[in-house]
Image 1 (cartoon, rainbow, N blue to C red):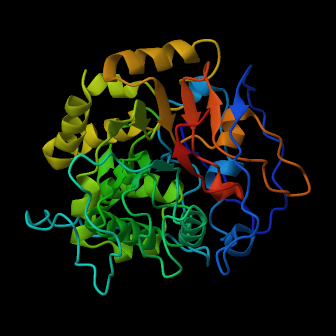
Image 2 (cartoon, rainbow, N blue to C red):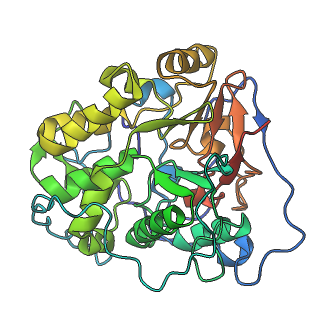
Length: 394
């Protein structure tokens, strides 16, 4: 089975409400649900801007079970259905591999017409507040709404948080309508935050690895225990949007390729995936990040495929062994609590999915594994929420 969504037959249009998922339920855990503001800012109400983009139901409608099956990424298996266009014809042809990035393109294009109302920090001044943001998956409107609600951007979408520190936990593209727009916004906010004395940083998610592999290797075959496939086929099966690939430019590739796989802030070990696979890449954060960058740079297609497969595993911190898994990562890399995205909270918790099509109940981040782990993927692709939270959570 696959760690994402392995299709055996095409999904018929307008297939109705999603069936109840047969998922394990956590024996313990707690929600963190901060009080909603008295009224949302005009034009940025979550309810008003929540996208219902029709192509974003891959993971949610085809979730394999149990957790022991999450060993391979989705692939195109001979004899089974292959992705097609909306007219039933074969999917778009493979893109030519992107040329190697020019070494001077690290921060992307310049940000124009930006105003920074905040001065640089005084010597010895303490750091600003720390925020983390869960999986976005191309839902740009939801991201703008959530950032504005937290006071991190203004009504025009520019940084307004002064010396705040922001970490995106990865997975910017796929399934949603505007992955490249999300990447452009994060790159813009990184420049604006730095000028204001704060910072906006991001982690490498498994969908970044998949997207970069599709751009670089296209339909070149890879060897997988689920059958011979390609990055491009797996990307399409896992919600890849052709318009994102067509809009991908060298400065996007350069920026994505340099994202770290993990980091520590204020005692929080920040990861994208709820897996212990990071331990296979090094015993320090620097070693892990260097190893992943080396894989992306020059180790070849099979090594990148294996890296993607490992970081697509999930659910390591739930159940009876989950606390020990979290403790192992924390004892190796530092920190007192793991903060991750990747696994949508409704699946992680076994939340109900009503037959009437109501949204999953996601009041906020989910704290579990004896309070050693915080889940931040609110399930925006399944009509959940795009979560932004200030750390620490109690």
